[in-house]
Amino acid sequence: MDNATLSGVRSLLAEKELRPHKGLGQNFLVDKNILEKIAAAGQITKTDVVLEIGTGLGALTLFLADAAVQVITVEIDKKLIPILQEIFDSRLNITLIPGDILAFDWEQTLFGFLKSPLDKLIICANLPYYITSPIIFRILEHKDRVKHAVLMVQREVADRLLAIPGTKDYGLLTVMVNRMAEVEMITRVSRNCFYPSPEVDSAVIRLTPRSQLPVVVEKEEVFVELIRAAFQARRKTMLNVLVNRHLADRDRALEILLSLGIDPKRRGETLSIEEFARIANRLS
Image (cartoon, rainbow, N blue to C red; front, side):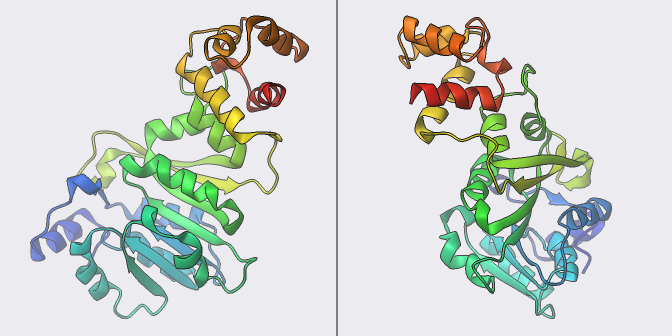
């Protein structure tokens, strides 16, 4: 059965009397060229174990299985499991796990497939838009066990992840993710490459966890509170952000910013990750 073309997906769903589950954000990728690009961006070798988040109808899974020693693929939609078992029946290097990836204990459920504690997973996923941020932060939570992650995300999210200081897309997500990982654009993807077509275009990105963080933060909670405050009040100066959010009184806030060579009139959206870290460390 052809699960990687529009006609094939429509026929398969009709045969099984199924419809895409809107509540689960199901938009099946029906462009083989994009599937090949995702698999290629994974830089997979025959020694790699790949985790796929969201099996869908298994189109990407088969591309990944051709390249990897093993693919662990997780699917939340119980109605798709019998179809996928049929599709994967002869593929001995595919392990299908039903369930919600966000509910798993990754250490017990996923990393057990690795031969050694030093081995790392490669992650590939066509992410439902509504769980994109939680999945990215879960990946970064386990960054020491992940080689890299190739993710299909909403175009707007990709723009935010790749944004630079001073632009409208630069924000909390940009700072939090880029501190932990390098972000690369792989390719942009038209909404017409999916069935059913979503209302927005997408992009494929690659996240590579940093082996060494570019900035040292003394207290993580202070750093997070600072950047959250700065981007919740994007139009306010950093001096006012620090004072209004009770992070420091006016004299102390002024002293910190000036001592770091940061103009108190600058807005948070213009600060680099390093500048946020230096302010947070002084607040700590």
